[in-house]
Picture (cartoon, helix red, strand yellow):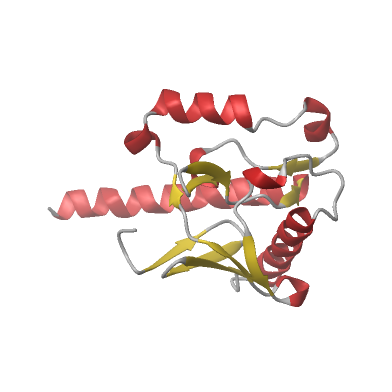
Length: 167
């Protein structure tokens, strides 16, 4: 693994990569983001433990949860090498995800979404691909996250444009 400590920001959670582990905590940006992060951590733990019967992905395809705190305050998983379309090849990544991890259409129609079909939700652990973000989230959370993501992308683009102008 390239760096000992790395920090990643998701829509509702922050992930701290320290040594061999990934520590997931809720975002503190607002009460809504914090509450959604707690919900996602609790959901992930329930899916790992097999409590939520709507979750239909076999446990051997999940990145193991090694430790968690109550109420979704913290989830600790193994650190993985995240799938990357540039490094692993776009076709290989997409084909692998679609062949091995697609959920039945009915599960998507329930208003609950799980395991977004994007490469950075998957990683390589012990030479096999596992899911690293497998919490359920509601349609409301998905829409709010999508809107936030687009706002962040616009802001990043403006910053990049300013840097180009000054260069």
